[in-house]
Amino acid sequence: MSRLGLLLCAPYAVFILVCVGIVSLGAGDDASQLIFLQLPIAAQLVVVQALGLGRALEFLSWPDAYGLFVTPAFVLLYAAGALCERGLARRRGLAPARSGV
Image 1 (cartoon, rainbow, N blue to C red):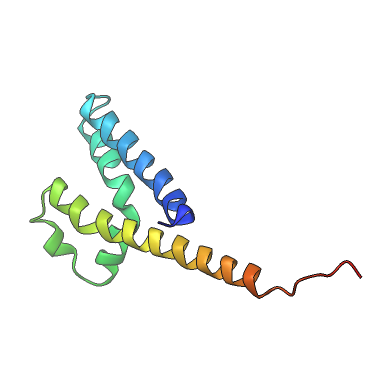
Image 2: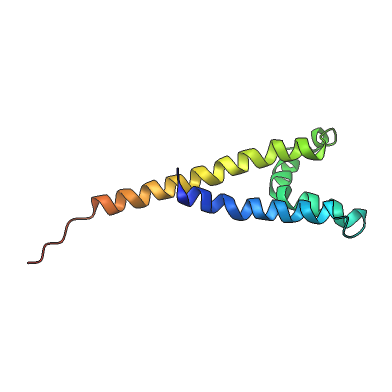
């Protein structure tokens, strides 16, 4: 289990919970609720629009969109953290041992 991977995933999970919590509490009007639902997956939505797949999003519900976009984001964040952690561990292991001489 990668601590750095979990550390990278935790802020994103908290951000998602805060945004969905604001929407579920009914704070604001419909436009602001839509913005809070879009915020956690905004980067992924931009990529999908740039690829010309925006029309496919019209048929997705919010739970489906979150499942489609958030799951790979967590996998990538965790993998990036695990890769960095492995690289740091390798560097520490390859450093020459210093003698007291």
